[in-house]
Length: 191
Image (cartoon, rainbow, N blue to C red):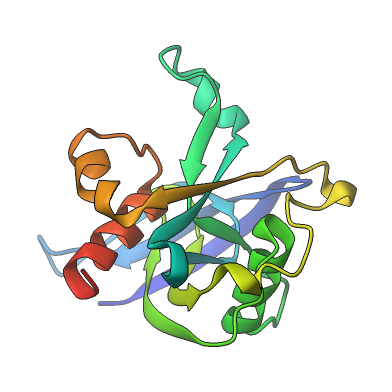
């Protein structure tokens, strides 16, 4: 199957970039190509990391305000999530994960395991998430955490006992896809 980008324009550029493209691509129904116009929220790549604090048998999560969620009146804007963040251009995913953990919750991560990569929402965004798992101890909290002041981040560390994870997942307590994916991976592969 082949595709061709005929035209691609940037229609918005600020914190995010929105592109609009005219594309032709092969189809499953015939030997002819179809011509379509599509828009893309171009986010680049990101990391997400599920962290277990071994000496407290806890999962380290964060709580922060997420403006887009208030478009749905049943949500108050605050989400409980795993640590995550956008990668800089040409940044190594593992180094980005270490940086985000330090910035968001203040822990030093020595070893991590790659658990997979996936597209966050491929119908509208280019974001590819590189997911990791790591174990830390409470003594590994050597930085302030809480997010970067320069980015006006306000992040709360939450320690969830591993014993409560399955009931929280079954109660639909998490509303963030990367968090649900990572926590289900954790249950399937580590507990």
